[in-house]
Image (cartoon, rainbow, N blue to C red; front, side):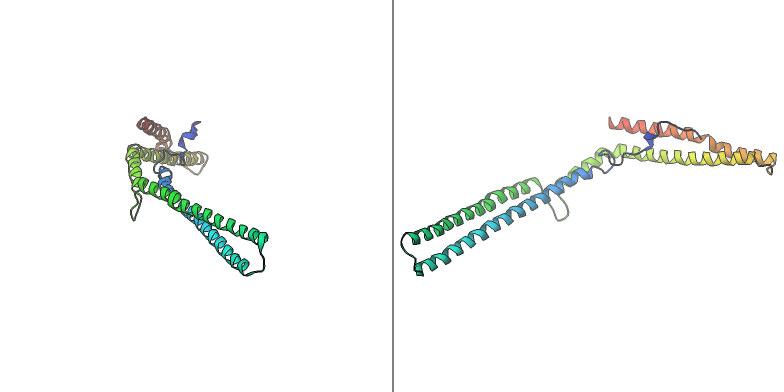
Length: 218
């Protein structure tokens, strides 16, 4: 059996972007982009809810203590100081409500509008992803067929190599076996010889198909 130094040409780069259907990792980014918009809006909405809840807590806390101070024994400048803390809480409440409104009315609204303009989603899929995948499939189709032929040629080559090795072993064993008559050895040789020669022809076919694939990409 013959050996070839350029064995690397028989190894398929299955992780390569250019391999058939590997473009789906790229088109999936469209789906991911749509989902990330939803995730971002959820993130911002949760923060807005936190701002609203904090403002509500401040408002309730300020009202509670204002009633207590009004009914309590404290008076004068100390009473004014206590109420000053509550006034600050009311102002802080308004500030956090504004933050909440800005998050909902500006941030979330902008993301939602951009998502709607960028992605057109049906019940089944996103239009932009389907269009891109169809374009990739169309572009890959000619050389994908050639690649399939390359893989078939490689498989045939490896099969021929195995047959050659098996036939060579049979020939060697028969030659050293005295129980085989000359006629038997001659008959065996005639059946083995066709199996020994094909690998080199198969390898030429592999290289030829690889050249065609490469030219189809140029």
